[in-house]
Image 1: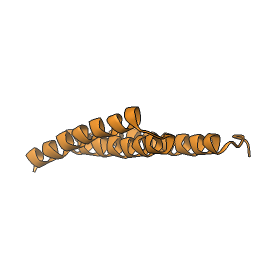
Image 2: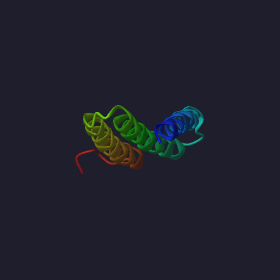
Image 3: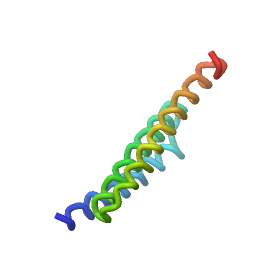
Amino acid sequence: MNQLLYYFLYAQIALCFFCLYRIIRGPTIADRMVGIDIFGILVVGICAIIAVITDRMFIIDIGIAWIILSFIGTLTLAKYLKGRNLNE
């Protein structure tokens, strides 16, 4: 069981590199936004796997904080790209 979790961890780390490639080389801003969102989801998955492997559940809190910040950042970037003020 523990060995399988390590395989999942390595797979998610490899997928993070694909997302980083999309963030850096994305032809449009929308592609970069999607890459950032997927990267955030993968980081939360990595936090969850590490929490299960090490049996330290406070790492889940780090993942929750990461996803909340990612959501707020996505909303802010979407409003900025639409040309609206952030206080509307």
